[in-house]
Image 1 (cartoon, helix red, strand yellow):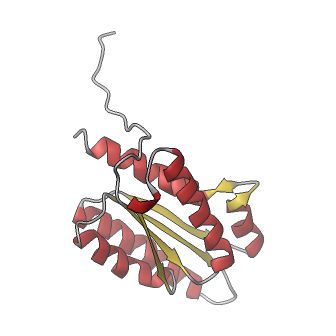
Image 2 (cartoon, one colour):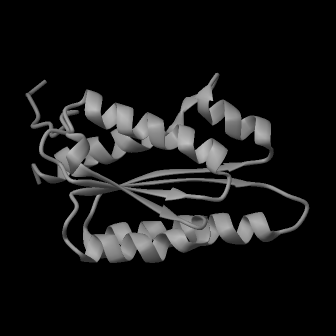
Length: 156
């Protein structure tokens, strides 16, 4: 079989300017996601001076702030972190859906890689599992997805 050209993103964060958006709602979970994202980026060469942490009220506000950050052209990528935990009302569905839809739109409109690390869980235990215990740290996963995507885009 003939060799095919393959484009892959190298996990090298050196020189990238990254904004991390972090929801204050459920901050005891989100702080762990932020720690994971910062650790992942710095372990892969990012300078702490090139990372900006932007704290916002909740996941619903995230798309607007992400849009402003993307439009500023100051960042090579965004990492969006939050925790939306299902309650007894449909509020969860509206917040989670609008957040995901809005962030996808920002990424496409502004041609910026965006790591989606907004947890959407049925209960607090699931959120804790995804913020650094048995299910890993989704802040790390979001940062790595953004990083790999940024490096793929740079080759296209």
